[in-house]
Image (cartoon, rainbow, N blue to C red):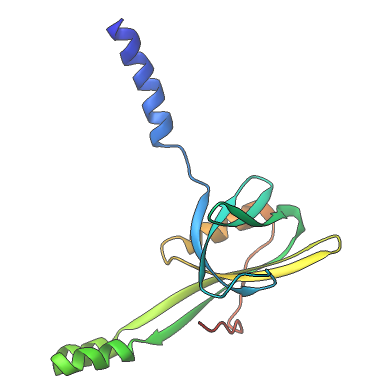
Length: 155
């Protein structure tokens, strides 16, 4: 009996431990989705033939991967001046060093045309996940992501 339980655990535990999660936490930054404010945290769910955006338990949009017309990405780089000024009040040296550091925000944009339904949106992704998101979107759609330095995204 112990052998059977041990065998079952050997088969079940690795399956559940390594089961891939196909969703990412991103921030909606603007686009054609109604009733959603910029900066709202949403869940990007990537399924084999569908890209979904969900907020809580509500599905906001479901886009067939074949209807994606463009994938774009960009970065917003800026210096941490506000943080540096705050630290300069406490310690001038630390504030000066902080003024030299930079912060990057990574953005991924999608546009689609599914018959009469057309739209697009931009999402801010985590710095550790945006490359994986781009690779997954490229693999699902067959489109190559475009570097969009002209993406003007304001938070």
